[in-house]
Amino acid sequence: MRYTNPRGLDVSQIRQGAWGMSHGYTDSGTDDTESTRTVHRALDLGVTLIDTAEDVQARMLDR
Image 1 (cartoon, rainbow, N blue to C red):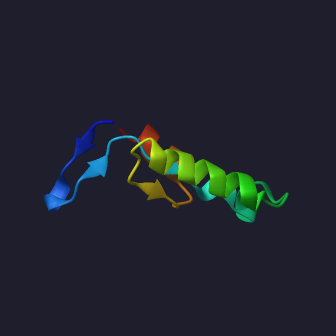
Image 2 (cartoon, rainbow, N blue to C red):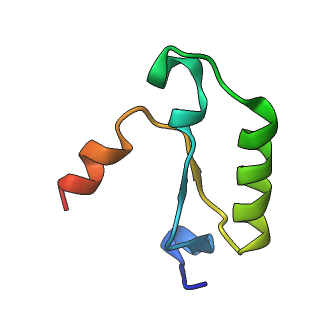
C-alpha cells in the first residue's frame, strides 16, 4: 500500500468508498454484515481512508 502525508497525517492513496453501503445510494436497504466485512478487509489491506461522501465519483472525475 502506498501512502501520502498531507499535513503530517499518513493516508493511504487507495480509499474505501462507503456511501454505497447506505440506504441512500440504492434505496433498497443495506447488508450491514457485508458492509462491515468490506470495511474490515480494507483496513486489513492497509486502507486508512474510508470516504463516506456522496460524491466520490464526481470528485474522481474532476482530476
